[in-house]
Amino acid sequence: MAYFSYKAADPAGKAVKGVLEAPDEKSAAARLDEWGYIPIRITPASDKAAAEKGGRRLTNPFSLSRRVPAKEIMLFTQDLSALLSAGLPLDRALKILIESGGDRKINDVIRDILGFVQKGHSLSEALAQHPSLFSNFYTNMVRAGEEGGVLEDVLERLGLYLESVQELKDYIKSALLYPAFLVGVGGISIILLLTFVIPRFSMIFADMGQALPLATRILLGFSEGLRNWWWLFLALIFGGLLAFRAYSRTETGSYQLDSLKLRMVLVGSLSRQIEISRFSRTLGTLIHSGVPILKALRLVKDIIPNRIIAEGLEQVHERVKEGESLAGPLSDQDIFPPLAIQMLTVGE
Image (cartoon, rainbow, N blue to C red; front, side, top):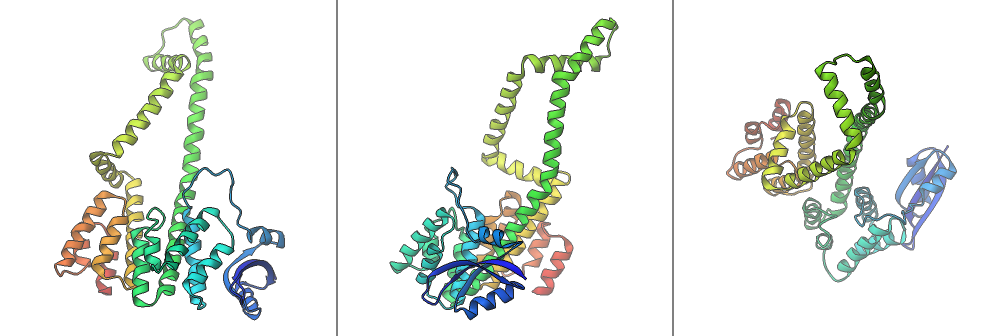
């Protein structure tokens, strides 16, 4: 037996939270059904104390960021899909999500969305009022679900999509954590060597009175300059970072930086694979949700951050618009590997 924290809606439509013991998540959901509850979210925990803690999503009162985390958008999408699939009307489902507590920032957003819906607007129109949280891709998928009468199914696919995106981000962060740690430790070690260890050797070399090799003299001079002019080095580094950031935000700078990312050793291959994964997952989700192929390609192009790949997709969009298939233009752009092109051809 294991413990699970749950969030559900009771027969009266009110949000409830609690902890129950069951063999697995399926059994926990069945137990909630027996009680007449509509399961929204069931979270496993190692023990009862952890489950009770997991059942309460606490916010950080000292957080200075007003932006809603991407994970909260994912949870909102999945929870709303579960409530709509259970047959609840949209306004009641939104009220339950607000009453269930959670992150204060996302609750304020849901409250605003509920206000728009109660005024007669559609959910997609309400979501469009928060473009920084819900992208064009998100709102257009919701709009397609509303027009096709399959909103709960579209939200379910959106929740799965956002979950896979979050897993990819977490994987990339974890993969880069160890190299970043090594770089940080290596940098600190070099600074310690230049400021504390090498100066002691310079005293030994001075006592020897022998001529030193040029490389050694350069290293000793750099060590001496770092100790005496450390503030200048920090100012140069800080200024360089600011200049690079400003240049990367210009039209030319961002284009050259995106091109460099694709041509760098190892980094280029990783960047290309990330963009291919984002393109495939997003386009597949849009098409499966009933969005026309041309509109789907336009939306995918807008969410691809790399300008080089985005321009290639623009050309693909134009050629598909003229009547060509999808696999041919993608193959000419040299964006996808041959295996992916062959799979697209078979699918078409």
